[in-house]
Length: 360
Image (cartoon, rainbow, N blue to C red; front, side, top):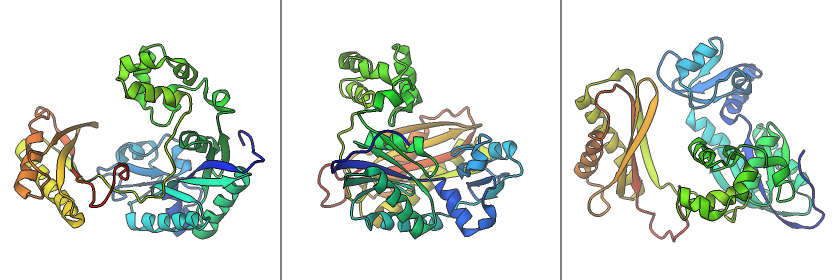
């Protein structure tokens, strides 16, 4: 247990993160899987192409993690139990969890299938966090970890210290004690690329980042991004917990080829077909397309994206959308073989949504 408890009623942010969510749902459906090495991904066949969606803690102990090719996971753990992704089951379980959180009469900001922020007023956040865990478990049979913070950033990071089934508090009072000597990519929102660039400036720890002048960060990362990165080091986050429903900015489809493709005419046709499938998702929402992004994964496993705004007004026009997606294929490296292609279409905001309502 980290941090402190407070005796006055005040506002807290709690971050609720389900423990090994997808694997846990599968164990709930089949209790014989409990304690075993379970890997969920693709169609559940590790000889096929696909990636790991999640792995049980028992599988993670051997280095199997989400995003890893199924074939690599199979090499590491040939005796693991491989299961296909069942999105409907995970959505149903997620809905039960989120409804349980809403029953606590707090502000619930859903962040995905398996996590949410809660805006809570309480004098004892640790007791409230225990109540959160028990409420979720009673409703769903699934365990969660709860991070307690004085803002979203600290609550989110605190959760990792509590996993699994734990509660941890991270506030301004213990921020530098807990985080100061950690690398910068331990911060939510700072990835490996940013951490590498910070390291080139001689900034390797959270404390060093917090002490860096905004002007130096602005010079390296730009006038907005630089100072924003600095706030991460100090644990500052002013974004509110909002119960406004999440609104998708885009829709996407992708396909993994069971054999690498090197015929670029065939690849282009596949891209056009994907673009038209995504267009149907946009038509269903009545939100026309404004931008197209292409994702390519070259063999063996190197991923790139390229993007362009659509010419003219927002559109559902099949020719414009498929031509724009196909045009992006020209930017790719045609000397390489391709194992995956994906198309994403960004949409206009929904009718009646004001500024700031949309979260990508």
